Image (cartoon, rainbow, N blue to C red; front, side):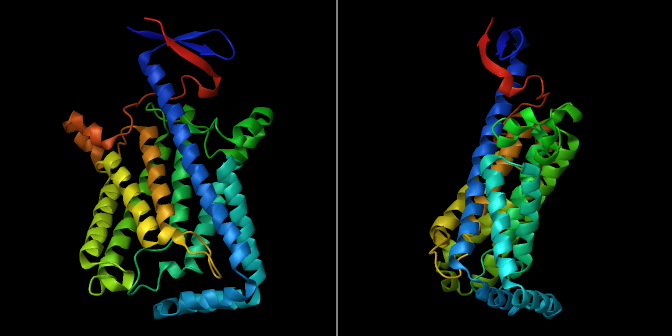
Length: 365
């Protein structure tokens, strides 16, 4: 059997088989993907924070909350009356408190600092914005194309939690540097210690279930967005500046991609297609989220949706075959199906060697 000599920073060289080396390389590649996409998401959060400091004043907050409640169903009016009261009473606290929290989230994602806290705060702030200033993405009518942005921020954080639970320590973060000196820091930085407490496929079953939940919710959001785009605009596509054919293609594509993500079918292809579609929506329809001006608060939902799907792609690479998907059923029947379903065919123990301890690996046939 072919073997590989792995040189470590500390201790003697070790010999491993090709499978172990493949696992190590897969882990390192996935952590790079996670860091890149986390950095991009952090940049989006930083844009949000800067926008609130630069383009929003406390006097705008009550009107934002009032606008969010206009046209909403009668059974939600009590909620919007409450938030308008809070916006009127504490506009500065709401505006600058949100901006400060967004700055913390941005720093957490950009630097890989206090990640567990950053993920939790991201979920709370994202959902908080979604249920207040965004009015649950509504009120829905002509011109509506999606369910909002705040819920997507929360879903991105949920995917990152699943990734953190899969791998535990991420060597490409500031948390890793701090935890080397102060081991107790991991309680703030890590959701879980990684695969050492998990199943034989190298990731905990709880992380697998969490990733499936994140994908399921993401699928629901995309199906809902496509359905909203068609239902409210198909009779008058000019309301969103699209032709009937373009709108129909966009809505059907979102519904199909969402359904495939929801069920875990052909995930690799669908994730790539979904990221491309949502990025095109952001560039072409949302005009990169601009222009920035008075009242500008975020760069738009398209870029957040694209990054969330790319994070799901990273989860796919992290887990290999996911037993909680349609893909797993198809792969058992058709082995070639993994080519369209999986970013990685690694399924065994990821914690054989720590990537940050490896100097190099060379064939030793």
